[in-house]
Image 1 (cartoon, rainbow, N blue to C red):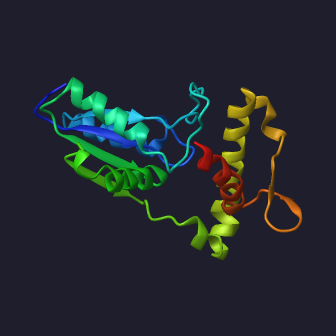
Image 2 (cartoon, rainbow, N blue to C red):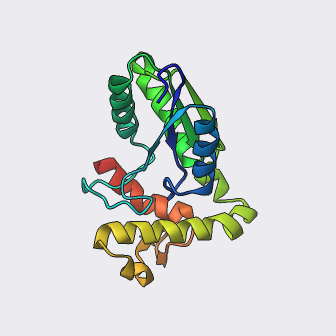
Length: 185
């Protein structure tokens, strides 16, 4: 640890963790430059068991704020740089927006954080390529959180998209189901 060099707080993408290739590459490159890196694994993601009973939501910025506070207390004179990838970039930008003058970051770097589920729900390529995969992984993650086991990955939860109940196959379906949960957190 070199207190004259920045500490990077790294936020991974949706359903990711510290073992993602883009996170490992960033950490490797940054530590070669004598930076210190801290990877914040979002609640219940990255293979880490959920401890609080409150799963990840991209709307929550208090975990980022708490992590930054711990880093700032441990290294009060060292600049802290926030680096977010994809969903982590969205969460980081949200933190910067809501924290205002209380923001302790020297800077924030948002990498590929421009994804919009609502707009993307109508893009044919997104519907065919990204949505099914991301939706499947999200369902697996939330089932693991709810059941405490990966063995339930074959089980599916349902959502209400219209007058009929359908299986969640797109991110917007998951968003509809989880938005009710998020409002209670």
